[in-house]
Length: 207
Ligand SMILES: Cc1ncc(COP(=O)(O)OP(=O)(O)O)c(N)n1
Ligand SMILES: Cc1nc(C(=O)O)sc1CCOP(=O)(O)O
Ligand SMILES: [Mg+2]
Image 1: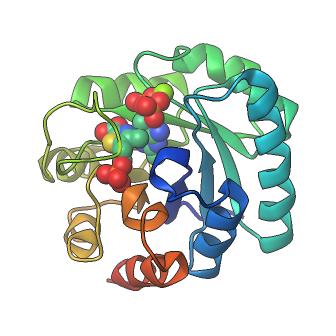
Image 2: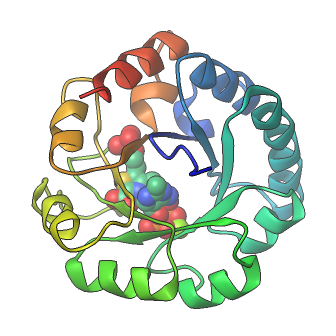
């Protein structure tokens, strides 16, 4: 069965208003998140493993996928469904070799050249961004808009996950441009009512 890559929520302790990672992830899944990406730039390896184990249990119980950001070793250690690597992380072909073919490999791309290289390296999906201005990643660069998604979609069938400034107001445009799914931080983890915010995004994905 194909993995459901429609709606990724990335964990972020700084934007979570003091709520635990598990609470945020659980409410995001309540609202329709299909993928939880463990993204904790501040944690020690030991803490990441603890967080990953807890999220692994939750996502298994609730039928969601678990992707680990940046760290292939942690993804393997906690038996995650996959890993997401960017242009400054482990090269995609090496990540694929370590992961094997039974786990999901996501690779970031911000240009057609990066997209083609990621597909050749063996990406199962591409993270395309930042689509819009984002509060979630300080070094994300200038917004790309929707053109790159549309251009990649014309040439390749690889699933495209749009990231950066995605909200319920613009998610429909992103999907119409050719995205397979969306990935968000602040629109969900910083919301007062996490499950409601996730539900509103999930609703906007049905185009
Ligand atoms: C789904 C998805 N797309 C893109 C990214 C960004 O990855 P990267 O460029 O490595 O940046 P960091 O997230 O590591 O700061 C992502 N995490 N997920
Ligand atoms: C983690 C991340 N990666 C991006 C990229 O462009 O690759 S933008 C981003 C942050 C997304 O946060 P928000 O949903 O709050 O905009
Ligand atoms: Mg990264």
